[in-house]
Length: 354
Image (cartoon, rainbow, N blue to C red; front, side, top):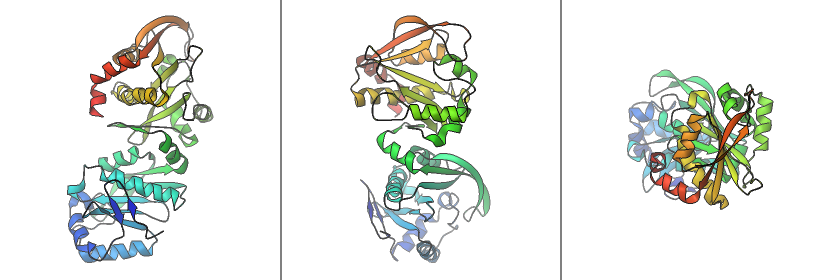
């Protein structure tokens, strides 16, 4: 298994050979490569590469050359489940890091039977943070590490992907330019509870404030993804939970309700619109839905504006309340037809950017 070659649509993740040392040394003698790693010196040399590859092999790491016809970089999984990679300048911006890391994760969880995979990334390495977030990693800590390429220590994040989250992401995962929408697990309960606030509790029918981690865990369990309507997913930005999107089970009239809320500090950044631009067409296509419904309090101007932007049309009003409202208030019902969504998305910059 240690010698397994991993194949992706565009890449071979193959074992290093002695002939790779010169090429890898040249690719990594780049300050933008070396300073984003802990182990690569600047400048690098073929001899240093050979020594590093031997040391990694002796430590039991699964090390592969990222090859699209020629060597482009390295990726690895350590025995403790630590994931790492680097790419030469010419290979960046092509999605190679995501493609290679996804293959290594399948190997780590499927062959190595890891329960979790970790990654340590410097805080100023925004591209790698985005890749990790896209793959479902969440920030679990902070640390300061020494980088040979910098010749100094720098602040970084510890990020983690657990087996259950990875397995769920194989069932449901949507990626937008800034966000990842994926099912939550019990490990997200404390983060979900901390995200709630009074304004959210006033403007939603099911979220209350304060919410305890135990209540958040129960909420996550009740809305677990089962490949049918009646679920909620977390919305993450750079590995941090920023909101929740959900789709109810069909009501008596056969319609499913869309539910959405974001933490206070994440509102008014266009994140809800970006998430809905991916979520709405996906759930309609996935579950064969022709019409969706949503409800919003009449004084929740922001949500009403977002829903209208995606083609939701008013379909009546009713009286309702929320966990943090002392009074009964007017709730506007809105429905969205598939044709209206298609027309709205055609003019939606968030959809076009995705």
